[in-house]
Image 1 (cartoon, rainbow, N blue to C red):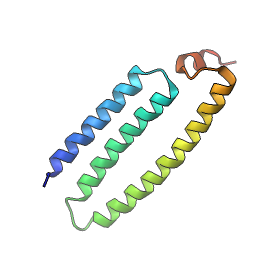
Image 2: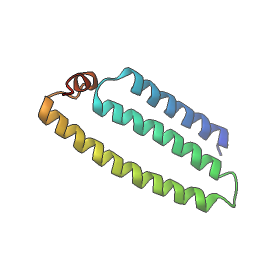
Image 3: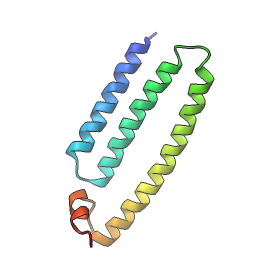
Image 4: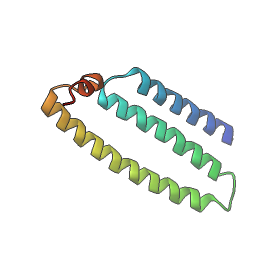
Length: 102
């Protein structure tokens, strides 16, 4: 059975890949996927830390479920904004969208 350190290392790799995607990518959808990777890495670290103590297991699981539901709502809002921006500007390039402020 894998130890907590394996889960923490996987969560660190997920967060690092997500941070790279945030810095390197210019597409709004790719940036959203990168933010979700960072979020999932942090959530995996939270769950792995909560699994070490028997007293905090229910609290960690409830907090994780709350965070997953908030992330789902956040994805819905950002995707709707991305669809609106694509309809208006015909592009999802973040730098192009910030240059066209008026």
